[in-house]
Length: 545
Image 1: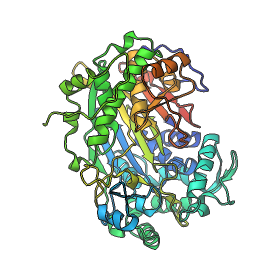
Image 2: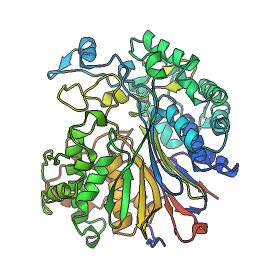
Image 3: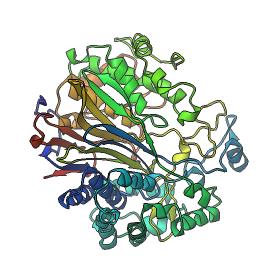
């Protein structure tokens, strides 16, 4: 039985939601789209796909029909992993970028936006794989709420409007962007009615023909033709040859539970490394928001990122395995590098040889889904295929052009990925039991959000909504630290005194992330259902019955 402190000491607009069937997303209309599937007799997978389709309409600043996805699925007895991140067009390599964009600091330049940032979109193949393996309702039923919202329109939510306006100056001239996302010559305002007829047309086509129609036939031809017109390398063959992959999740024990992530090419392993390091410290004996606890977590996260940025790539290209990076002896040696009184500039270790939305759904039969999809930076590449609503991600920017890097760009290869679903289980009497489906969207903030949330729940007994609302910090790529304004002022000053460089970065896409959490209340009494939390940093909702 769950034993949380149900008080919430942090400013919030949200309360935990209790129900036997729950969908938690960053937009209320998406949560309700998923709930409609559960009302129809569908399962958590049906709900997740319906919510995912709807959120491409109501939160296009974060994801779209040209994005990528990952999922962790608890089918009632075991956990399954899905990697629906796209691969590079076959024509890509370092010389491709060098010829087109020249060099900078001795390496080929890469564009952040436009066609040469677009890998094969994986999200629709992800929906296809999930539905084919676990879905119970017809695929057309799952598209219906999103089609309705796209055709009839919806009043724009506040935080979506803010992020939309922030993206316009950079993306307004990208092919197809203004026609779809600036219909009045500007970003829409809060509560303004937004319709996406092209988006609805594509969803209706997929409902009639099935999700594979995205990669073969009319839609694929239109995507490839628009890429060709814009000087991109993406072809019909690149689309036709793509499939999402079922993968074995990776995990790490922490305080009697197991935290699970998708294996590389994603960065979920960073959360597991950091938790494996923190396991060597008695974090729960320290004040929850005090300097000692926060300092240890930050240092563990820095150590994790030092290794992740060096080693993680498409697993076919990695120098070391996830098992080597998560080896207990290795993590113990890394933990010894932490000075409890001082920030340390960590280097990469040597393991021994051997824009995003997150949503969660759970049903009363015990199926739980941890799902994430993304266009990466805001609207992604900024490219929108005309009259289709298909906005393309910019995951190609996640590659390196350093020939020595395991993450070096190459055709058919997956780039380093930031989006990561997570899951928590516990072994009881020799049997693995589901505990929580969770995730935190927001670029490099994601594994850090996983770490901070898990520590708050497992070390300190904070209930999911409190752990979600608590102030966060973020370790940047240069190991400077961003902190939320709500972090205790004494702790913030003490972090600086210990040598941490506090820096404020204006990043309207990623900021401090946004989480959704669904926790199973009692494995011995399924009728109690779940408790869910939805992050107050977004327009979200946890809804259930």
